[in-house]
Image (cartoon, rainbow, N blue to C red; front, side, top):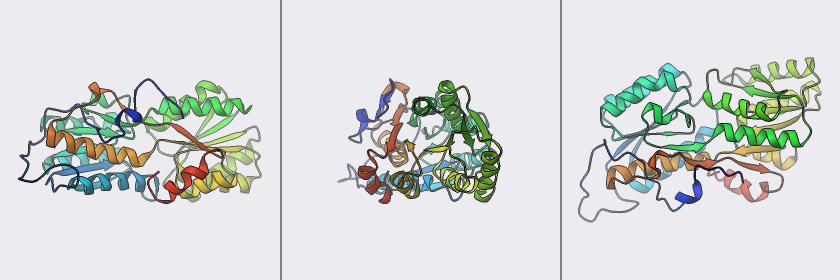
Length: 325
């Protein structure tokens, strides 16, 4: 497993996941007999992501958030939009409805800055998850749960370089995403021959045809790096259709990519444990609202990255199939 100097998952595994957000939110006095996980807290928390419809990654994030909400008696309001402006509107809507807490991805930080500030001005605790590790403090989010995408990309680049690759193709499926750009930049830091390719991640058929044409046109491409599980599955189709000998790596897991690792059509995936991101974001807000708990001094809580490959897929696959990894 890849380790970094930031606050690691091991430091918070026992659900002592709290946020540096003692200001804001509504202090609710516990009812008689109320306490601990499983109580009916009465809090409402909004989770807002940049999910593209059909991307199974977000099913896992949401499953973690829903389990945390069930454990703590929270009314979870989930919404999503891949358009940065529309995601900002969703955050503002949550602020206007006076939810008790907000968990949001920060993949397009500048576009979301105004609505995040509105939450702070309204005294609503807000945490970031999944995307925006380099910007969450600047925007005013009290905590972040996710992976350092530059570290993840660099680790992937090191592994690909060790296999002798010279010209990876890094496939960016959402324009303007700081997370995806950081992943590719990390790969390129170890492989200067890395080439980025922009595709429309909302259209799988277009992704396959664009990749197929690129691979057929340039036989020097020796590795394809898909930055999501669905894009990696599109890349498998494109590699087969083009006749390319390039190898394939992916970021993130779903059941199909886990099976692809097991059958050898995908070399490895870089996992960030999305279930944990959703679970800990909601749990941290609950603990802050209920107990005023803080943790980490503003440092991000890392849920990854780690490699999933042929050596450990048999141990991890059951959890992927269960929707918790």
